[in-house]
Amino acid sequence: MGAPIVTLDLHGMFQDEAVKAIDRALKAADDSTYQIKLIHGYNRGTSLKDMIMDEYRHHPKVVRVKPGDNLGVTVLVLREL
Image (cartoon, rainbow, N blue to C red; front, side, top):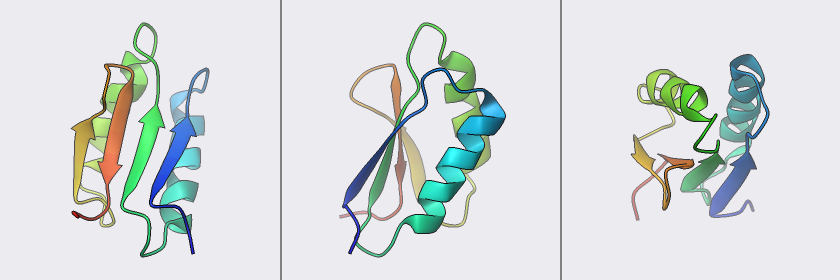
């Protein structure tokens, strides 16, 4: 059984590295996981934030992409509670 919320720290990653990490998390997510919280940072993390929005808003496992609790976080919602 997995965690209900998975947190990934993407600080310092290039976009291709971040995609690989996010894809691994999505593949590993089971039915108990309902969110993947992506910490990309704010000052230099905006390119990652934009990439996440573009890449994952139409991903088959992602219901929606939403802003996190601060500007440096984006959340992939896998299922609604």
